[in-house]
Image (cartoon, rainbow, N blue to C red):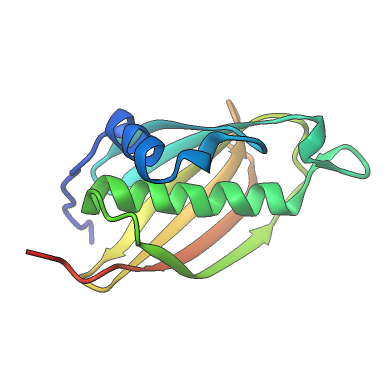
Length: 147
């Protein structure tokens, strides 16, 4: 059963909002792109460079975990609007194959968007392929709505 979701903020608006309330989101470590936010889904990307690799030349688990968490945050903000205090309460990730350096994408779907919790599912792939690198599910706690 498909749920109908309404986008409150598009990709550019989410990025601009994060620049205001969470300016460190794209400083230092891995740099993220918010490629698209559509009803019920978002696509984010990052360039995995040498500093994101573990021994053996594969993208590190913490890098992929961060991408999955960021994808969940982006899809949620895109649908709830300016709610900076939405926070991760759980994130589970399964690493399925090694990822080479280069562009990686997180394709994230909303499974549930309630008044207090949001649940997402994220597929992480090497950009341009359909091969899953990792699969994650995340639950976020949403702040109470203010009038």
